[in-house]
Image (cartoon, rainbow, N blue to C red; front, side, top):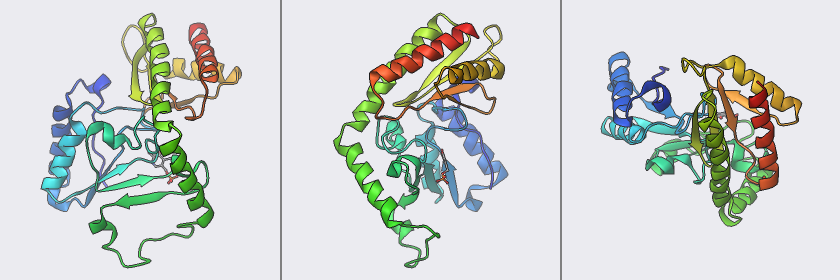
Length: 259
Ligand SMILES: *Cc1c(COP(=O)(O)O)cnc(C)c1O
């Protein structure tokens, strides 16, 4: 298993095609396309910092995998099931992965994960050849069917887009008057604010931790993420109401002002 750099527009300053060329170059030199079975990529990085790759990065990468017979696997565990304002984040980038992995939002909290993909790949294994101890648990599957019904029929994708507007509107307003917010990014109800030193732009993990701690003391549980621990991620439940969302944002804004 090898790791390769993603596109990170706020930090690397590369266009999507440039970042893809860098990734592809590294994979070709370190591994060799002919030695590569598959690549696994989050269309929008979760723990890594809610990083949205630059336009053109994912399509260029997919084109290269297709040309070289490499399976393109999108990890949609965090981004999937309406979270980003599309059923799957891959749709934002116009890519169609060969396989996707899903979990988290799939069954409204019941333990379930799935691998879904092109029949040509899924059917390559014999019946029962893909399995696990708890694979296909009937109660979890029933919960997933009910959850998918809600995503499709109760306007959850549209709700994620409304949440994006509310979150981005408020965070961009804060960023306009506070240089410590270096970047606001994301899609749907998966939005991040990256905190930096106002002078140097360097990641500011201490400020991020202070804001998170002050918010938690006021009852708003926030999660930080990013390699440098300087990102606060906003991923409210899609069922959250405007009033509660705004109350949470008020508390975070106050925590930032006090930090
Ligand atoms: C949570 C998470 C996982 C782990 O999923 P499990 O079903 O718990 O194995 C994998 N990828 C991403 C992007 C996640 O957020």
